[in-house]
Image (cartoon, rainbow, N blue to C red; front, side, top):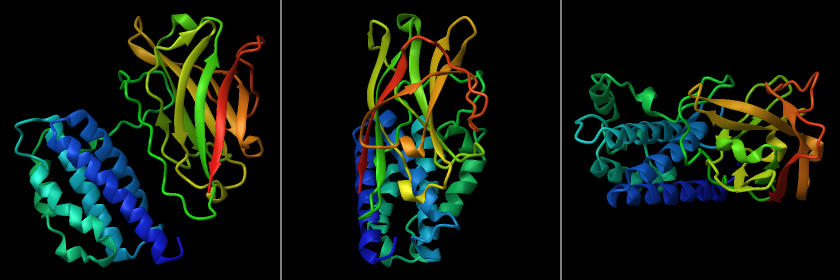
Length: 299
């Protein structure tokens, strides 16, 4: 981000997301409010990190404080009647601070974040326990959230390519037997380290013959030219096993840099577990069954 215009576009997008979330909160729709608060929190934390060059240190402090308040508000919504967390009235005081981020000073922050955190620490449920779970790669999972964890399209910068992947469908010979199927999307380097926050599609119930249909868009949260050489995007197909009471990965696919082109594409499916270093791969099936995608690159 090289000039004030780009920073203002980012702040405007954050303010719009903040307003949408607080509107849900005001209208008594806690599930939608929590989901939007958590998505915005992830973006604010990314830009408030020490290695981000997009904002000044003073602005990063403000972003960090807003992120803490959003997290604490989520806790209040998940525990109605609790005196912990942050009230909607307090959160609404922050709106102008976020909207005018480029002109604000950290010491002028309208909410006493330290006091709110101290109150929260007296609770038996610390803040980190109500954030969106980061699912790991084993098969012992918590029950799946039907809404998934897809993130909004990042604010694109002029000339910077941003990838949107529409997951159309996946072909499986026993497609109709899967319960609560969804797909997790990861962006990883050539050593298997995460480059962005992973995203889960919502659960789908749409099945056609040998296909499970998703038809959802996943927005990759970094520009393509900011990703390191050798990166790949991974897709893990998962479903619920009632007998074991857990979510299991059934198969997976991946797409490397040279495969990322505008238009429709299909990816081969591989046997689990996902191998992020892409070595010694074994096809899931010899039948012509694939993961079907449509790619769009916006700049």
